[in-house]
Each structure stands twice: as C-alpha cells, then as structure tokens.
Length: 232
Image (cartoon, rainbow, N blue to C red; front, side, top):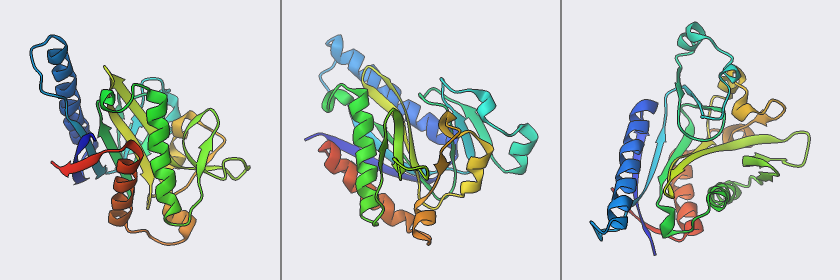
C-alpha cells in the first residue's frame, strides 16, 4: 500500500504554497530521473497538502485573462491577488473558507492515467458531500463536482486543476465549504459562463466546520486511492 505524507499548511499565501509544491514536485521528478539512470534505488515520496488561501484568482495555462473581470485597482480594493500559473484549466478563485488540497503524487505508485486521477479526486469529494446529506455528481464533458448536474439549477461546488510531469502531479482541489461566493462574480469561473457556483454553507444554510470537512475528505481520498498516510 502506498504511503502519502500529509501536512496541513493552514491559511497560507498562495505564492508561498505554490513554491512549496514546486519544491516537492521537482524533488519527485529529479528522483525519478535518478532512478531511471540507475543512480538511486530510493523510491519517490507522495505528499498531500491541505490549506486555505487569502483571496486570490489564478489563471491556468489554457485560460483567458479576460475571464478575470477586475482590473489591478479593483483587485486591490477586493484585497485579492492574481497569478498566472502552470496548471491546466481556466481561471478560478481561492479564499478563506475554501478547502484547498494539493496532492503531489507519483502516479506510478497508483495508475498512469490523468483522467482516472481526476475522477478519483472528484469521487472523494462526492463521497465527502454525501456524509453531509448533499447529493452531487459530474457533468459530462466538464471537470468538477456539481449539484443538480442534469437540471437548469446546476451549480459547481468543487473545482479541479492539475499539472503532471513524468506522472508526478501538483495543484489540485478547490472545495467550497464556507467560501465567500461573491468573489466568483468577478470571474468567469473555469471559463464557464452559464453555470452557477455554490458552497456547502449555502446548500446547508449554515456554517460548516472546515476542520471536520478536512478530516472527512482526508479519509475519503485515502480510501479512494488505497493509501495510508503519515504526518510530515
């Protein structure tokens, strides 16, 4: 059974978390190259980071900058930052009350299939929501976890964006638990103009314990991927 090293970074600046991810990501890739060159027999490590971010908008490499509906001055007024980053996908928002999860997995320990990897991440979130009585699922052709996916009231509760190289992953999950949904009005979320965004807080009509949700999702991810974890 693979072992995943776990760390909760708490509320952390987006750039600081990104640089930390990059360090772990590069370390795994470098180790895979050493193994391939027969310079090392030490296996790669798998990591998973949980955190929250201050208000920030991030644009993936396939996104369009015009999907950010704020100029630089307006960003300052909203106390938000903006980064163009190296994950897939379009623009999204992170902020306090949103649970952000970054798996830095060597998929050679699991399976070499990015689409399957995304479906596994989605399924762990779907199973977490079920624990709170929220039924959710997928929308054909779109990444993410959605509520009322087959109805005009469809709304996204969790977004995903990943990067991989040599089957090592980074970036990951933005799960709206107690998110301030007004910030999504300043972007075209994930480039999708005709679907709303929601949160657990909105769906349940109450603030949800983020620590508790983190614990549930942590267990669901371990079950879904079939790993054990240890603290970093």
